[in-house]
Length: 259
Image (cartoon, rainbow, N blue to C red; front, top):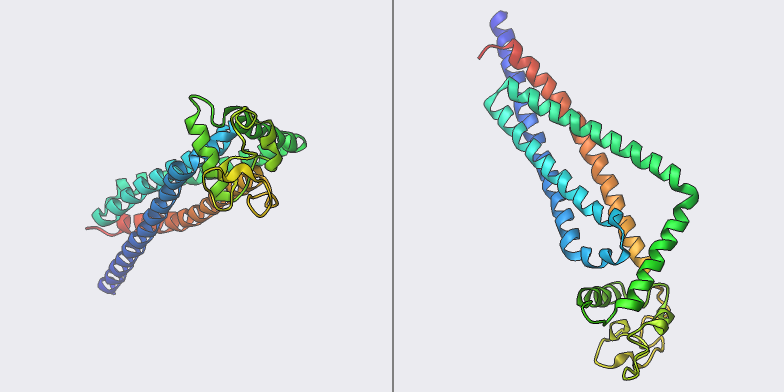
């Protein structure tokens, strides 16, 4: 009976090892996906997110990258602890999971508190960001030494199919549009079919005049990034909870079963 009990324990331990190893593979893949999304956002989208002059929005990309790296490193530690059957490393892995889990809870609570505190002023903050984008477009577009801003604005208008911050009329007060030698009414990047001097006409058939301003679409993009952050946090938290249970069970089995 004791031998049979020992065999059952060995089978249970092996099963837990494979389950924990599978969990770590999923955990590692989740971290790699989070890291990829963060890098993609930073490389492809940071140029026009920087137009808002706010570090809050660009910080979401860095948070994704940091979370991805931490998850990948934790997953590697978990795989090593599982394969080597090292109880000390399992404890380290469990502590890391608990710390990440607690950090996610603290971040969620702080985000909720911040939202509640800013609630009466959130609209004012959004309006300030809109004015910043409008001012940047009007004052820096096509100006000397502002090539990065010009490229970012052109990319923003073409990718989001928009014209101006609020609407195409924002360009009337643009320093570049008001230059005597410039006959354009809007930048060529406002055109539905961009081409040289296509900005001479601002008819809705030629430019993105009725589609809305760029700030609304940019805010929608930023909100989608925040939704990704929330979904990633919930998903990783669930995986961590499962992983903590597997780790505790495997640690107990290794403690009871001599190797």
